[in-house]
Amino acid sequence: MLNKFLHLVLLAVSAVFGFTGAAMAQDAPKDHLAHPWQMYFQEAGSPTAERVFELNTLLLVIEVAIVIFVLALLVFILIRFNHKANPVPSKTSHNTLLEIVWTAVPILILVVIAVPSLKVLYFADKAPDADMTLKVTGHQWYWSYEYPDNGEFAFDSILVPKEDLKEGQPRLLTVDNEVVLPINTKIRLLMTSEDVIHNWAVPSLGVKLDTTPGRVNETWTLIRKEGRYRGQCSELCGVNHGFMPIVVHAVSKEAFAEWVKKAQEQFAKNDDSVSVARLKAR
Image (tube, rainbow, N blue to C red; front, side, top):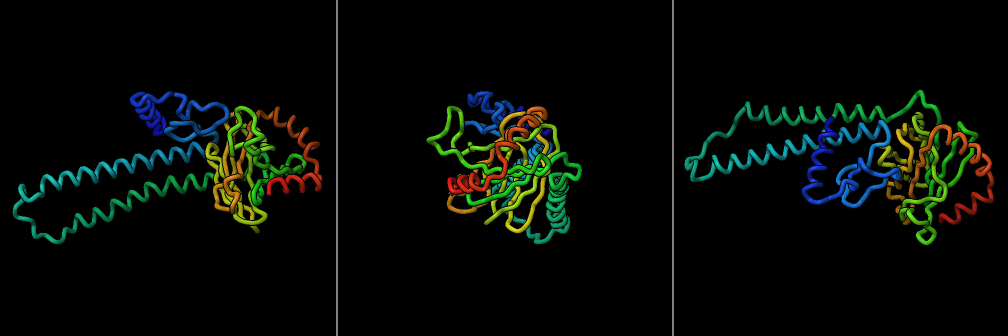
């Protein structure tokens, strides 16, 4: 409800300043990219993203209310307690009620923020009844993906250089092998790293989790709509940190089943091809 209200406000601001409706996240195309003059998040593509965006809207409302209250209080003080209006200042040094209020109110605000924050955190934590699993491994500087429930095939996903981009492919957000996942499917995401800490982040899906050497971190997603969801490594992992894009291609369950059959043949374990791919990434 809050997101809908905020969307209406942003549409009104867009009309005032002459921004086009295409700039809004809700009107984003199937590529789910951010756009010039975009004034809000990208379109939420998963239940987790929806809850994260709702929490952000709640925080924005609380912040605006605090700013307005403090501004009104300052204006009141300037008018009521200036030297001209109040030539004899008060000698009061303590006010028990006021001290209780300004201690209790911030605590209540923090509780209002903490409860929905923890609910979102636990919601995004794990999916005990997941339909499939995707394993993500971070490397310097590319990603590897494994499908243990679909034949255990794996492949590397590497940035496509600027000179090799085709028309319409975004710079620094295009890879040679995209992650293909089915829509309306609970997907367990297991993440680790081979070298340093990376971070697998896809804003439209509400996923942002560290890949840590020596341990496996877990989260999950359920993609609502078909299309390409793009992200990047969000942890400072070295000199080529900015060249680790993520592309999730969400397709129908039928199309995913067809892709799995082809992928099992295309990405059959081949040490030589993997070595070549990793040399290219370095």
